[in-house]
Length: 271
Image (cartoon, rainbow, N blue to C red; front, side, top):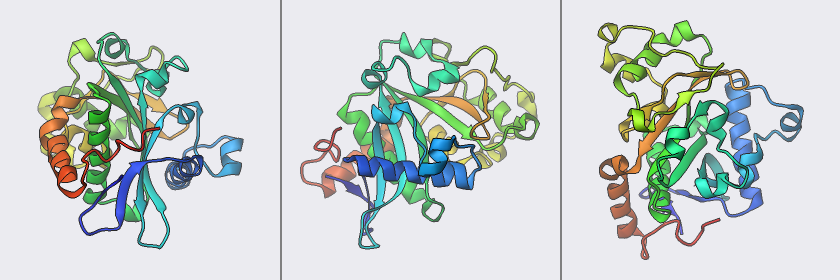
């Protein structure tokens, strides 16, 4: 079963085969490496795919366009639950952030990552469709907290001092759950005084993914990290899933139940 945009041949579901996961990795390569200039290793360069050890244990949400006559994957999101991460001893986020507060919270955790959409499909509707899939996934697995790295495409801290400071002053995660950039990579986000920031203006200039997170109630951890491989500055987002409920989860669950007999769009395709 799948979820789709009204009257559109675009659907979202979990990848079901190794081939679909490889197609999602190819999309990631096109966006992260060819478009944004990330630095692939030799194996990735030859395969033209972005991959790592987490792909083997994660679920992969994929957006499919059927209008071309074939199932063309045009977007993806990697979803990693704690039970899966425990198989290799950590989440991807732990390479950059200390998330011990989250790990000790005795909550069901879901890491969000590797989100990307092909340029010609980057619309509000596609982002909402991805969130529809995520909302159904967190319902299926009774997730309490979502988290992950979100990127600003620059490593020049001075040039992105406004968005970093805005996130620090207006969206800091409560201390009991707050991630912190790991020692040796910590970059202070408190650069510009709060009174010198225009929240509305800075928010409008944030990357679409970060804006989307904030709209569903995301908060931001303490400190940023430069990712030299991806040419980005990363922050750690935290979303309490009950914050998603009013804006996305209930809205899209009603939509799914209305349009799809049987309700849960991901129920029959767990991997």
